[in-house]
Amino acid sequence: MSRVLVIGSKAQVSREIGEALSAADFPMEYSAGDADTLQRLRVQSFGVVITNPDSSVEEDLALLEEMRAIRPGVKCIVLAHHSTPDEVIAALRARVFACITPPFDPVEVANLARHAASESQWRDDIQVLSARPGWVSVRVNCRLLTAERLITFAKELSTQLPEDTRQEIMQAFREILLNAMEHGAAFNPEQVVEVTGVRTGRAMVFYVRDPGAGFRREALTNAAIANPADDPTAHIVQREAEGLRPGGYGLLLASGTVDELIYNEVGNEVLLIKYVDSASVGDKGSVS
Image (cartoon, rainbow, N blue to C red; front, side):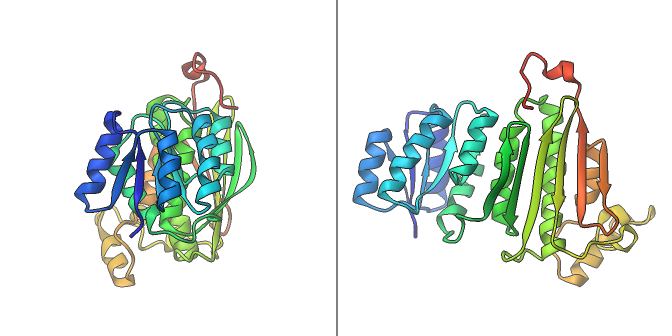
């Protein structure tokens, strides 16, 4: 079983991540700092390294370069006290496994590390097609873990939005991304989904294109959005009959948390649009 190395044990979140890993009987160790991390990697192999939450993304990327000179296959979950769009894009290009800033969820980070430790084919799961602050396009393999990884980066690219707006657009994006992977590609890792995130002066927009043949809304009997008014759980029975995972609320949740949800004619391309009051982010700066 691959081990996880958590940098620094003095930070509370680092200790809680370690405790969550230990509680799951997952092998982990702490390192005292960057120098100790490099020394430990020279002596033994670690599948995943979780950086110090008090560090910066820039510092972590510099450390990652040194770590990969010793262990080329090491995966890095970057925890940082702050991120900028330029830093998140740099992390994507450097094939960081995930990038997370406060508020941290130690259990969520630990679970992500556990899944990362068991992955061997991950390096090319997220391919950057075009990236600059305000416009990021990627191509991702259709795997649940890849979706969760991409969501961590999308969250970081939207940190300058008001928190309630950010939560709503990210909830919608997650549901649409998972729908694209499940219904458009049956979670086949050989298939890809194309995703573009755009931040304008007045809106946050996500474009998602899946490789499937599309759908007609009236034919979605396994989705909650198609339930008749007098039977709000009809889709559950249909999903069980089709052997699908529990769910089916994606379109319903997405349509309720964004301002516009627009599909192309065949149903394999979608635009999510969330309008933003520019005054509410004026003193935080612009991501575009």
